[in-house]
Length: 328
Image (tube, rainbow, N blue to C red; front, side):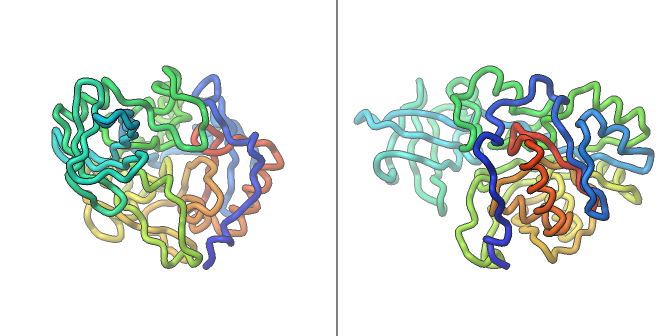
């Protein structure tokens, strides 16, 4: 399959730059099992679940991963922490006038970050202080590149799910941004179960597919962990994955038999799903691996037709945009 098969035209004004006034105020495009389209509000979701459903949420917490510092010579450096390896060590993307070499120091507030080497696109960096403390004091919310404003206090609150618990993501599991506590309670009152897992979303979620044939693409690795209580909660029930990250974790566990570890599972049309029956997700970028996953789940023709309809109907796209409920 070619990357060009997963393209669509999107007017720039439909890329949501800010969240809806209230978390639950988004629209919901429902794609049923026949491929029929239904315009709904996100607040309709509890009416679409029942006693045989289990909603699975990704409880990862976004860290303030983007740091800005200077070399002792004065040159500006951006340090985007992708993964904390130890209290004072991390893997990071680095942007500077010249590619940093081993031994390069970057001053970030009172802390010093020293480049130790490279691992592919990432740099192994040692900090003079606790990495998580440096991120909390000096980091900023790692908004996606298509959101053009400088992160503010509203982003710090809204680019985070209300149930975020385990720090480690550099991007939000955006399907979950639409929930507030009251709506989750309405889901419970319908008799549906709610369970959690953790998949720490990595920087690769923003990386474009750089090959022509998608079969040649290699996914980035992301850490996941699924509690035994969640495995029990989905057994024999209709599983609604809240977000593509949740789906990848569940399908990775089903394929490997391991409830925790690292996954580089690449899902595209032809994949045989084992764990998930329904998917709640936002609208994704053209030619992206996430759009390929959604096409695998809902059928390429159905999904691309739904995307064209969403554009015509002026749905809001991407992280701060509207949502889709897709039946497998």
